[in-house]
Length: 156
Image (cartoon, rainbow, N blue to C red; front, side, top):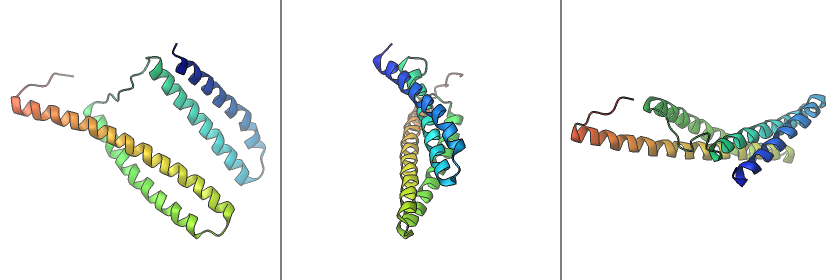
């Protein structure tokens, strides 16, 4: 087993342990703002555990690091991602405005936390969109070859 896979398994266990130990803390917290902040940390740890598992699957050879989708699924996924990129852009603009307008430093700090998340989402979605663009470009090149040489594409 590669060292990174071993480390990822340890990290996943830590993240899940964190979820388990913080859940009763969140449930017992009466203050709604504090409770939601603890719940956000719980959700992040759960997300981190899922990311670790996906990386473990790729690192152990159980999952391909390559995005293999049929063309219809790739186009639909790409359209959905592009739509969400537009939504994320609006969220970023709105949050930036709210950060500037608020006079309460505590509110501004939490809005900046949300803004950082939205920027990270936007970056990840943009990178995924670019990846899908490259896959579509490769397919378009294949289709040009097909049309130029009148080659019948294989069934599949």
